[in-house]
Length: 253
Length: 367
Image (tube, rainbow over all chains, first blue to last red; front, side):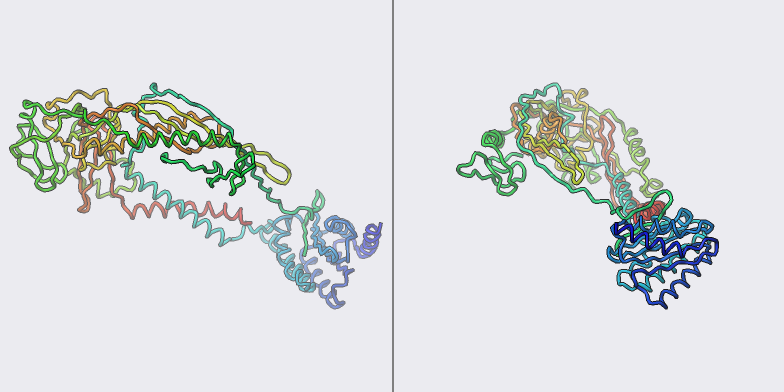
């Protein structure tokens, strides 16, 4: 009951903040009290700049607790309340301090520009280090900056950022090493073809197959061993609250 | 192969087994494998039998006295043997040969006027392949060798081609082989948390009798054993009782490794093959491992034969290269030189082609 009251109170607040129309400003709701007033103002300005530049709506919401609700579901509800359908995309960054959960919820338009896997991973990679150090102004600033970067990439390239498209020196080093290894192996095979002088280890060709008489053919059971191998745990998807209308991703900080 | 003594070892880990007083089972103190006394008895009774048999086998000898016969005076009269003054190889030729060159070192040698001191072979496998066949086979041997230096084929001239009868001992044997294998059968089950593999281990006892016919072991210390084994097999259906007539126009070498000294090589091959035959009868397991084996000769016979070999010698960058061809089947063996630069080029080109492909694969796994 307490959980739903909290969500309800937050939603009443957010609905008041929701401004329909293409010029909807960014939203900063610091219910957990992580920022000073001037920091809220500065963050608001940063998010506004990005929002106006790309015709999107961004929100940063902090709460003391989600009251037992999953952070993803909580963030999705917020997104649905504040999203401006006339914009090119909407995104909410939610922090729940008690659970130390973070979640980025995106609508389907934003999801095309910042994908659930590569995009969210890249964006969270920007703000998570500061978040883990409890440097919230820096973390939110990085969120705005990172979002700017990803949206700029989309605008320029016409496709969402994917690190798989970027040059990866480690992959190159691995590929070069494996290729050289295969090349070396092929070289050894080619060199091996230059010699067919090999010792005869068996006398199979001189065996009279018809002479073979099997005199004893006994199989005795001895014992049994049991080997247990724990299954490798897949990555924790419990924080995942994506559905057909919501994208994003989250985790702990 | 089998030891001549038996140690009671755990069939699972190889540690020494302990029988704990008062207990009904024998326990391995290292891996905790538990075995019934009856199982242990069955397991090691076999090994004890084998150890005894191994000791007997160790003491057995091939009956080599019957291999070869003395030359008759008439036969010796038409043959000439001489020793190369350069390398010491002993060569047989017909009475009309006045001079020849040593097939080992190429040294021109005059015929000495004496012959004797060698056993007459039981059989000879006559040459079927001509000198032209040997040259053609060598050219065929070069084909498809990507690393062969261009200069080797362009300037290649076979320096010397010698047809030679090489002395071989042919071993016939009927053996009794006995072996223990460990058969392992896996049953894999999955739960939500783990993969459970149950491995049932069996002792598979096999024994049987089989015969091998005419396993060749070359009796010339000057011929490389590996080369001689590489040109095998010979078609024995064309083998005929020896007549000096077959040696005319060819070089022939007298054996200088006697049958007794050649026995270990034949035994090694027989043992390996006999155990292999028994292993083929162990079926229905995911894995099988040889634990113990003994091969005992029940009957054996050795014959002395001359087998035809073409020896071709060529030279590249002042280094001699020798090839040998089975004078009956035409199988050519040898070691060719390779162009190191070419080999590195192949390696580099392949790496250059593969790197971009593997780059995308590696990136996919890393991201």
